[in-house]
Image 1 (spheres, helix red, strand yellow):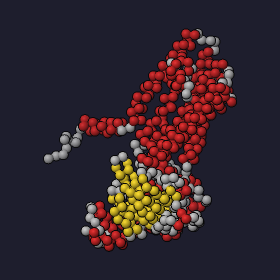
Image 2 (cartoon, chains in turn red, brown; image 1 turned 45 degrees about the horizontal axis):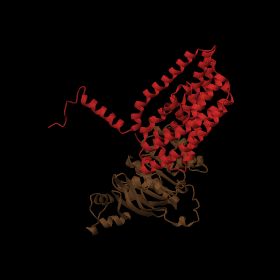
Image 3 (cartoon, chains in turn red, blue; image 1 turned 90 degrees about the vertical axis):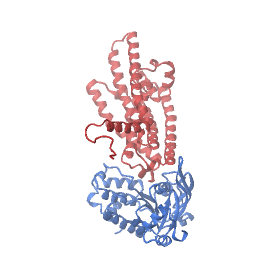
Image 4 (cartoon, chains in turn green, orange; image 1 turned 60 degrees about the horizontal axis):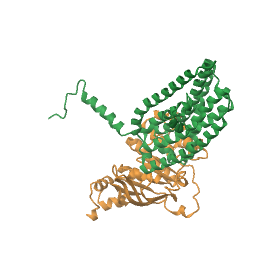
Length: 279
Length: 263
């Protein structure tokens, strides 16, 4: 009696089904993968919905002379600042993921390298990668669109410090989650920052959000940076109050992220996952 | 062939006199499964001990706890006098390990990888140490090649070089010759013997390769389902089970047949 239920040749729906089953098993076993499916459409809808509201309100209030140029500066500048936040976190997380991809993490974890030293190295690499990626782009913005981000001067340095510290905090938590949960959580490294995008009010003012969501937005340091950026652009003022508040929240955020990272490393050691890195 | 460059001074405290590795009541439970079940053993300084057992016997988990990568559910583990749960960084610079299940960055050359690990371990003259290891382990021809482009045998030699970069006093090896051909495996064993003889290092080796254990180990700790089921020199185990090879002893243990005198 043959153990085969059907002929081996030709197109087999059963084999297609077997592969679909394989991917469903994987999907079902990993909450970050499932969250990723829901997450993108939601983020897109919310971000563009609020932007539409902002433009609608501006149009209803009537555009001032030169407002189009200022609005263009808002978008290019906001994109560049957003990239500092996003690429900063990505630079941190990808450097960490390199160790996971190359199955080198156990070598590092059993070397004399302290977690805090590892974190300091990842922070350094985040700045290096950001500089390589973003410096030429700010030049391109001047060349193509006549928009000079550097004209923000000292304010840019303050914006940068606040954004990079936020990006490190998020990078730390993502790295800890990958250590604890394995490569199934890798997708968070690429997507988690976009969860902040609508709430950080990158392209529109906080006032566009519903009141309850404004309360959430004001808990995030990048919100203060983007509000501060618009104040510098539209009103030509440097809002030190916003930057100090952002720095204070960042301090709490970073300290919490370090504590969470250390707790996740300990949890990974308890679960034995440092020796079993995989999907 | 010499893969060591010199002895380091031992810390002059009581901890320096205790065995290199001391595990007491070491237990690891994952959910409902007990991977390691209250094992206790000590490995004397300068000796080579083998953890022998089948798949799932608890060898890798035990090694993980000795390195501090896995936290024990219960029990204690001390390496070179340091509690590996609370103060592992006291010992880590004087330890190292090798496992075929752990890799090094593929896109870095062998020299770059060894340089990074030399710095991580605080090796005083890392470049000289790399040259010494390159000579001893015959890495010269591929020292500047990307690690990911090496054969399995070459990668094992690189992993061994990484494991010896800091001249460890304690070397933990998890199946160091798994997936190697007999010639390369024999070569690796010879280098380990040379290192141990020259440095006086303590080696703990997890394996299910009987000839490897028989050749390298002064003492064998036999694990089954997370428990120590026997412990002794290879000669003592052969006598106790009335067998001619450790493989036969291993099969007796795996299949639940006790020592000859106990049956």
